[in-house]
Length: 294
Image 1 (cartoon, one colour):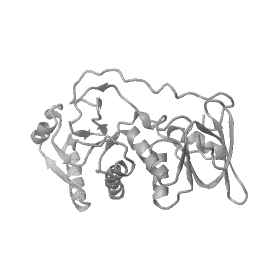
Image 2: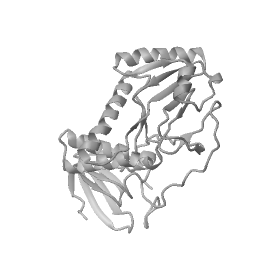
Image 3: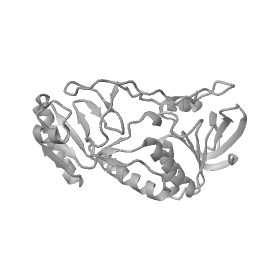
Image 4: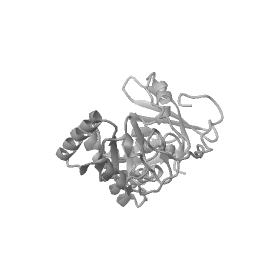
């Protein structure tokens, strides 16, 4: 096991897909003296239950362009790292339940053409041919996006981490950040322990700290008096569907067809819900003190 460095340029706190992506992009930009700290295992926090859905459509053209970049990025890191990201392009259908929503889709289609996206407006009958699970009487039209689909969030995270490691970054698991402080010269001191044993691992001095704690970002922020807002996603009962069906969005709900499940969110879709599997058993507090990112 490699010891923690005593000094580095950047410490990234959190081993989910965001933290691993930040680490990879830092190394891609030439910042190779960087370290990621994960208190248990990669993807053990917010990332493990992600549906892994990907799409390009967004009301903000800048975000839409970023999402386009991300889809291409998955292919890049899969090739660079040799890690399978589970990339599955199914195409996606956004359904409109009234004419006002259909006008929004027409506007999105026009904006998509400007951004180079491959979208197509569909009648309800045409959408039904692609996605037979919905009841067409509830909808007035649809839009199809050829580049929607899903990935394996765990595979993507490990691909980012491996690619970053190949570029010189360090990834340390079972390493819990217990406190942060900053000197008058602006140097951060990151205090760590071994999660499984409570052993003091010492302090890392760095120029920058990235808070990628996911649902624990607020607790990480409180190490340095930040009150970081977090969003807890609401889950719903799940039901099995085929892998190859298009991802579907409608109303204000989002249904993502991943490898084995699809969220049952609104009238117009019918299937019997089945139980979700539970969270990983290793999401436990370590022995010893209660810390800032507990």
